[in-house]
Every structure is written in structure tokens, then in C-alpha cells.
Length: 243
Image (cartoon, rainbow, N blue to C red):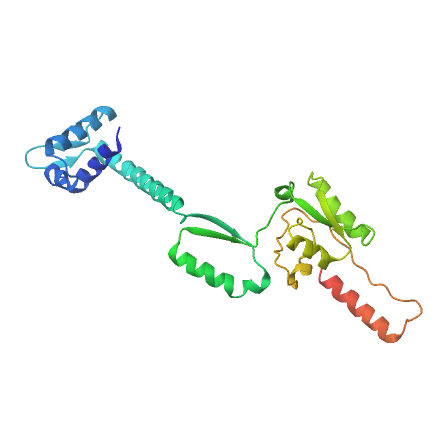
């Protein structure tokens, strides 16, 4: 069964006239008749009833027409998508960007690009699973500076089955962000640490389950004034509500 036979069949099913269809598909009428006869022989049923006065679809022809039209449409779409992909006009773009570019620059560029390439999809500020970055280099917090946070991060990686290759350590979050910016690796940090950074880095949300990180308030025993107690109570109340 050839595609040209199916297209010829669909054209005749539309016009119900062999002569008119022969002109449309640029074939002689005998050649068109041979195509349809070969198609009917391969399927094993008659698709048309034909006499000198008119051409009509058989019941089998009507059933075949519906499915054949859908198949040809899908094939045409597949050809179109293949052509678009080959020309860089179809696909998924994952774009990371710094916060200062997110309010105007990136949306404007994407809008203009999509006007010319409506079949391209965008993924912004991607959620990632730790398994996706298992082979990457990491820059990590030094344990002596924050043992709790250090152990929390390594526990997340261990749970994901990852033994990280640590290319560099540092004791401050801004330093870690600068190392990421310099291409030394990626780092696991609170998103808030990146939000106000001027470095050209992107914070991606971790899709894995993240363990709870505790934070506490330390109050000097020698400075228990009323205003200190008032602030302590206020802060604890707000922290509890924000959970």
C-alpha cells in the first residue's frame, strides 16, 4: 500500500469523480483507476461503486475513508514537525536566568521568539532531581563553619545515592555563589542566598523530598529585659505560623 494510492483514494472520495480527481492529482484517468484497483486488491474489498452516471463510496470505502484521512493527517503533521525540528523551529528550550533579567528582558525575548516560532516550548527555572546532577562537580560549605547544614546537604545527597565530587569548599554562602559563577561546580544552598546575589547564577528548585532544617533563637541570660522577651515571643510566634 502506497501513500500516493491513499491520497488518490481520499481525493476521489471527496469529489466522487475520477476525471476531476485525475486533473487535481496530475494523472491520466487510466493511471488513477489502476491505483485504486491496486489499493482495492491489497485491502481485499471494493471501495467504490462506479457506473457511467456516478461514483459512490461503498460501506467499506466510507469506513476506510475516515481512518485513512486521520492517518494521512498524522503523517502530514509528522512531516511538518520533522521539518520544523530540522530548521530549529521545534523543540523544548530550558532557560536559566538571573533575577534581574527575569522581569523584562527574558519575557520580551521569549515573546518575540515565540511569535516567529510558535511550536517551540520553554521551560524556565527548572525543577531538578539530584540524580540529574550526580556527575557534576560540587562546591560545598566547610563543615567547621556550619556542621548542621553541611551534614544536612550530604544526607540529601546520600539518600539520592550520590557521592559528590567536591572541587572546592568555602565558609560563606556569597563565596560559594562566586565559585559557582566561576564554573567551579554547583552548590546546594537556600534559594534566598541566590535571590539577592549579583552573580550570574540560577537557583533551581530541588524536586526530591527535602528534610526539615531547624532554626533557633539564642537569647543572652544576662540581658532578659522586657523588650527582649517581647521580641523573642513575637519572633517565635511568627516562625511557628510560617511553617
